[in-house]
Image (cartoon, rainbow, N blue to C red; front, side, top):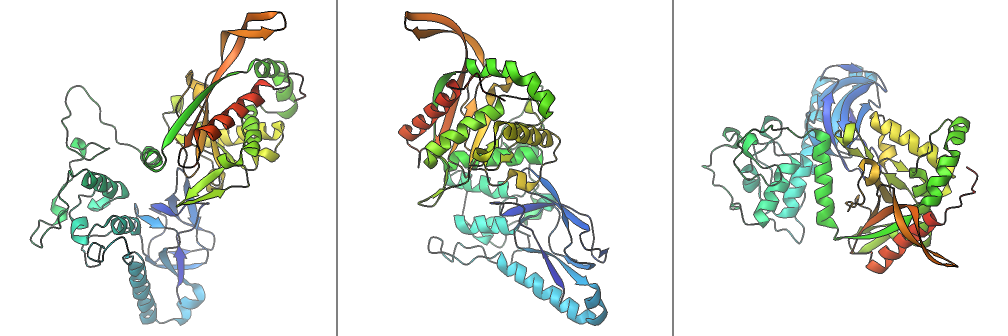
Length: 446
């Protein structure tokens, strides 16, 4: 039988991938471990090798398709099979596999969605499994799905197209009634890309001296991820001001020696991560995720750090993860931070580098911001932002009375999911991080 090549799982929680480019076509021979295609997952592009040697019989997904993990994307005949299996049998296997894949994307109706609203097979348009799944969940019939203008390749309906349509439908701004069989074929409807609002799909006037920039793939994925996070989690943000004078003075004292000895620059980021990891141990219910009505407590402390790509972050944002951050020394954290940041800016990260995060740190002070209200990196429930460090006059308590001194001050802000993190827990955790930073040992050996 022909070997079924499936969409691989490229990391924890990654359930789909976009096919960017096929490097082989039907009829080509391929060696084992030779790259067959390029796929994109959440912010990372990856090359996928062939698990076997043989000939490409059939490509079951096209470039630009969003495919769920585990779905068959190609059929490969191994060298032995090619010699002994009749062509008619191979063709029969191809047809059977194509039919099976088609069946997989038509999901039976659940109790919350009636059979009448479930998308059914028979449309002349191609829909990815993801789009059909969303249509099924939202109760969109096939006739209604056929009426949605597509902005993808060859007029296909993308995930964004159907989510925009669902949003408009909820707002009552679209006619959700199914079209009759006399409707104009969708292929004749040319989407007005230049006059559509990317957020809502509503037509609006564009005039004056403007430049229209098409979002690249990364920016679209970031936008989608941010919107989904705000829709999923009720965000609350708490703030605290921290005296980091000891940390600044200590770093100034040891950074040159540290760099000569370790070959690594010593930034503030590993110090912040160390304090966060300690505070998570004190408040483990910050290190959780939510699945339905269940709270999943993560035993590993894997801290992601937001890395801006390009000048002023114009190249997008990526969040590599430091695994088991609580088990690393400050030297180990510094090396991990520098390695991930460098590879992130060069687009050299692997899917595993981005997987498994349980908490995220973002440094909004990099570009001079005092504080920020960061958006939670799903499926986590909290994210901490560090502002810029500035000298300020501060009232200090001494045995002789209060005095005013010049101190290095910084704001911390914690955004958290109010479904599972109340103000008491969020505030207590934030205060604990601040305590660890303020009580940093200035005599510590780097």
